[in-house]
Length: 246
Image (cartoon, rainbow, N blue to C red; front, side, top):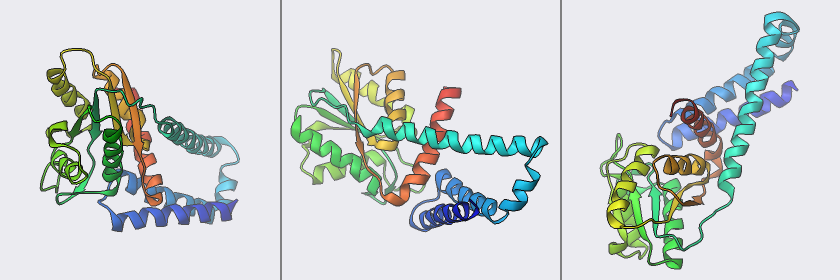
């Protein structure tokens, strides 16, 4: 068991360390590094920990820690399962593509996969309008919506089918501000497809419904393998916050 913990910890720690070099530092990356270190320490001191957690407070702490780790794994499985199946029917009136990090005026890989799904959707349903939503984050030289529009135009999406929403700084604001725009475009009920990455689908759809978007479907983009653990750890905490505080 000790060897398994050490090996798992090393893999997770290296994953987090790699992401520290590759991407902007996020809470998910920090938690990945810390989880890796925790598992390594648990494995190295496995026998000592087993001795002091045989009974009493130590045993209660051990059971709590194991329970939390199991709950996190189950939670991550739920998030992955929800985003796994796309529900778009390709007769929706509009598309909302949620913003993500950019570099200069260029979209990052996670955002590119969202936009590529939007391009695919547009080819199947060219009448739908596409709202690209995202403001200007720290260290960004343009709004995410601007970079997203630029990418869609480069892929042949007509300019008159793209609407920019450039104020949102959170997923809930993405939905709230996009709805205000779409309410002005349509003078009737409308169907919406939400496009984000698969790990983010549950929260995106939940906020869409909370903001009154009504009938909502979804499409999910992928992520690189090395971004899976940080993304799902961060997303699980974000969903927990949504359930508890919003």
